[in-house]
Length: 195
Image (cartoon, rainbow, N blue to C red; front, side):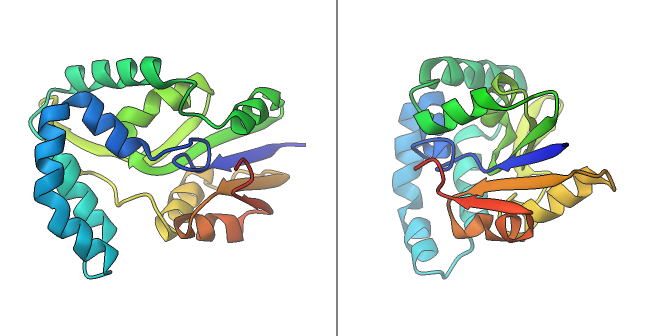
């Protein structure tokens, strides 16, 4: 039986959101300064007066814009090495180890930026569907080349990737409202399964 597993990342497989963790890891001084400057935007987001994608883009850009791809990738690998497996839910690790890789495909479908999630996807031999960072001349522009991979966009990305391929069963895992379109679409879905 050919199965496709679609896993959300932050909060589903991990104990914590990795965006703040990675940005603090990358440059703690800049992170804290930018965090304080973004407090008004975080408040507007909480009050639903701003959308998450705008605030996320602004904050990530304020820390990483202008950085070279090679340095970001180097720090992403270091971040992975320093935080794996501690950041992962033990139940999730056990489940991932038990997959029958011959009969299954596993995709990591996340709103997090591809640059710091890629080492995790590689570790678990998963295809990565994430919000993608834009680089020009190997320098991060501060923009994304894809829409924020959350909500309906998660489902759009999965459908585009499937491209007519057939699976006997599609199984999805998530932990927030942003995962609901993916969970509702899958043949089998699990909400906060690893919590």
